[in-house]
Length: 424
Ligand code: SF4
Image (cartoon, rainbow, N blue to C red):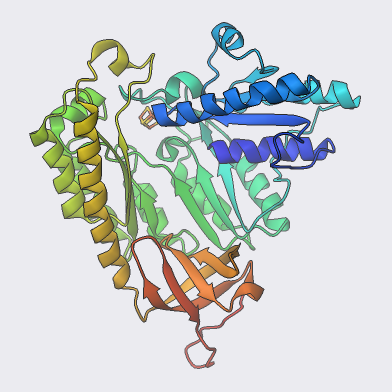
């Protein structure tokens, strides 16, 4: 979501005549888009803000903006803590910075915040719903991004068309909980309806969506994913913890059994689907036995990818007020390593199955001389001799596999199997 927000701000600044630099000292405007979902992310922003102090001191005209989830409704404390910052903006609230830049350049910033990315890539993120109504006890997001607000299907389809016109081939529909898309709208629509609408747009080849919630992933959504050819077979379904008591304390609203049933249904309805998840180890009061439930779930389900994190208290959340962060840091680390080691083995085994298989890869860009892209299951694939194929979907025969990526070569075109290389 932060990447999507940054792209939008970048687009607006681009339309005002600014161009991108990664040189902090040289920049006229520096924007830090903050994430506070975990302590480590918050620490990163605070350290960067420290780094900005001497730069701002040297050049008083430099505009420093702090955006994102570190900025709550009240900025009084932040202003005292970080005097080097000129402007504080809550997520998606770009206008104060645009006004300052507009003043400096003597131009009118109105109408500059649009959906267009400044430098459109092959893939693009499109926020479809902002905020979250769930209030999981560990999570700061609802306090910083507010209650759910869905965009209309017409608005999202229009943005998708604009992106398609500018060469985007793959879109990812984004939200803290995309499965609850539409619940706040007067029109009776859900994510399935939205997928159908964007599926109609001709030059969009692939559609993904992120992130789902087990309680809101309805049969209609699952069936729509299964039916629509452009929607990729890849679902991210966070489970967060495997033990039922921990899940209750987290206020997740489902049990271990219900989560397993949901995964079973997804796998049954969407053949070849890859499934990824998010989990937290060391939540308040988590015992060794309770952690074992998380470990066993990872072992049994065999996810394609796991985003694992150690619990850290986020001030203002329900857990921070009512529960004790009592699992020692060392235990959290051990649990995280246990999960990561297990998952690395599982991923390596799953990816081995692609050996000698041919997969469709949408080539996104070139890294260190090699073209790369993703297959429909969202596996990162490096492709030899495909640097001329950026923006194209190509068939790739996999010769190298590892837990984190696959590697292969363009499949020679024989004309017999209907497969082509270089089709866009
Ligand atoms: S559903 Fe996700 S974003 Fe919403 S409160 Fe829970 S963890 Fe946070």
